[in-house]
Image 1 (spheres, rainbow, N blue to C red):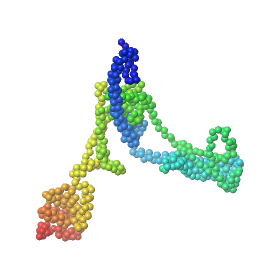
Image 2 (spheres, one colour):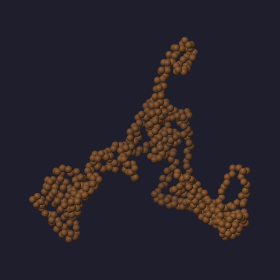
Image 3 (tube, rainbow, N blue to C red):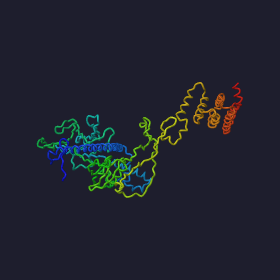
Image 4 (cartoon, rainbow, N blue to C red):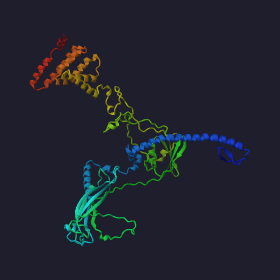
Length: 587
C-alpha cells in the first residue's frame, strides 16, 4: 500500500484526505500522537538555537571590541607577519648597500630638493594689460594716467567649525601693480609686463582653520582726473564674476566686447625650475585580486545551525581585515581568533569554512598582572615611559619553512578536534610587600626589598621628626639622626645587640663623626646607653679607641702642622679615661 499524504488541519491535527468519515476518528487519534511528538522536537530545536546564539555571542563581541581597539592603537602591523607578506609592498633590497656615512648625504640632498621644490611651487602672474574698447591703444604705458592699479588678493575659504554660522573667509594681499591700459601687444615685449608672485607657503594649511578652497580676487582702480566713457572720476573698483544662465532665450542680450577685461598669464614656476629635475616614480607591484566565493558554516553540537551567504572578498568577518589570499585568511582566523575552530572544506564554487566553538580555549588572563591590580589614578599619571613586568620569553627559532598549503586547515581524519593551546605563556604572578601589603611594582622586582627595613619615605620622616626637637643642640640631633637610621637599616631590636650595634656604628660612620667633630656627642650618647644597662664600659672604650685611631689617621694625612697641634689639643680632652668619666657621672 502506498504511503498516504497528510495535510495540516486548522486545529493542528493530521487527517487523511482520502479516507471516509467513519475512519476519521482513528486518524485524528494518530494525529494527536504525532503532534505531541513533533512539539517537543521543535522546542528542542529552538532551545538548541538559543544556546547556539549564546555560545557565539560572547566571542563575537570580544573580537569586535578588539577590532575597534586595534584600529585606534594597533599592537603590531599585519604586513610584518610571514603569512601576510604580500601586504608589504616595500622591498628591502637597499639594505645591502646601506651605510651610516650615507645618512648625512641623504639629509643634505633632501634639504636641497625641498628648497628647490618650494621655489618651484610659487605661482606667477604676468599682467599683459587692462583692455577697454572705448579707449584707443596707448603707447606710453608707464604713465599713471595711461595705466590702472591692480591689487591682487588670495581668498581662502575655510571649513566651517561647529560654532561658526558661515564659512570663514580670509583675504591675504599679495601685491599691487600698475597695469598698462589698452597696450599694443605687438610693440611690447613680454619681459616688460608687471609680475606678481604668490609664495607657496600661502597654500599651506593653517592651524586654526582647514582651507577648503583658494581663489584670486582682483581690484582694479583708475587714478583720479580722467573719465572713462561715463565712469566716475574717482577711484572705482571692478569685480568680475561668471554668470551661469540656464536658458539663453530668457537672458538679456548684451555685447561682451564693451566689458572691461584684464589679461594676464598664469603659470607655476615649477615649469621652468623643475623641468630639469628628474621625476622619481616608484613602481609599485599591484597584485591581482583573487576572486573567490567563501561560505561560512557555523556548527554547534556537530549540527549546522546557520550558513552565511557567499562572500566574494577575503575579509575577516570579525575584524574586517583584508587578507587577499585564502591561505592568509585561514591562517589569520586560526591564530587571531583562537576562541573558534576553523576547518577548511573545498567547495565546487569556492571554499567553505566550518566554524565551531573551541571548548579547549584557555580564557585565563595571560597579560601583565600590573594592569589588573594597578592603583587608582595610575593610568592618568603615566606621562612617560614606565617599566613593565616581562610576561613572555621568546625563543627565536628559524626552521625551514614548509610551503603554504591549504591541507593544514582540513578537518582531521580521526575526528578529534585540534586542541589549540595559548601561544603566549609567561610569569603572570603578582607579588606583594609583606609589610605594607602593596603590590610589588615592576621596577622593584630586581631589588630584594623584603630585607629593606628603611624605605626612603621612612628615613625622611625620621629625620624630619628629629629636626622638630628644640631642647637639644645641633650636634645631638646629627648623632641621633645617624644612630636611628643605623638601627633601622640593620634591624637592631634586642638589648643584647646594642654592643654589636655600637661597634658597627663607629665602623661605618666614624669618618662622618670626625669630619663633623661629633666625638664628644657620641661619647655622651654611649654613656646614656650605659645608664640604661644597654652597653658596658669595655665596649665604650673600644668604640672611642677606634674613633681616636681614625682621627690619628686623618691627622697624619694633613700637611699642616698647625692643624695637627690644634687637633691634638682638642683630642687631648677626648683621651681622658672613659671609665673615670663614667664613675664621676655616677657619683
